Length: 211
Image (tube, rainbow, N blue to C red; front, side, top):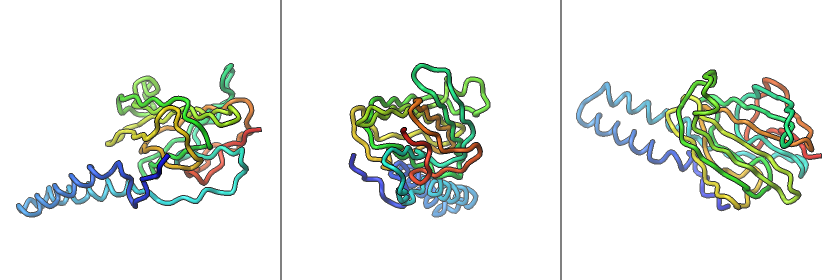
């Protein structure tokens, strides 16, 4: 996977920043001070939410699973499920970095981006109707991690660069989601290394280890 998303702001921001900056210039030239001020702050807003900081992959074990996003761990559940044993939710706010990163070295077994609504997390229809990106990563030992990003109330959509059967390297950037909820599904062959309310950072925080 070629990493062409290394600028100070994510590549997904270019059209947003360009149009808002252009609106600022036009309003300023024609003397519409109120609208030019709004356009100026909108431009700053897009620069802030699309910021793209460098992250150094920590020296975890080769069997480690790292955080795919920034946020706070809001839920850790044990499931009575034939396929997955653990369900972990990470709640990301608009102030968190929105860049998404691969949790393991893997092949992308499936990747589905579903357009949808921008609902509050507290809505009963949040899981069913929200815009989402669902990915299953499978490594060379057939260990798997399923990740679902769901958008909350956000001005921008979820972005993804992934394709099925694509090889990814742990911590590489693969998309963007701001003000979202990320759900990780892990099988029984893992040791979870998280606590509730823990702040995690993509590529820098340990989620679990394959046993």
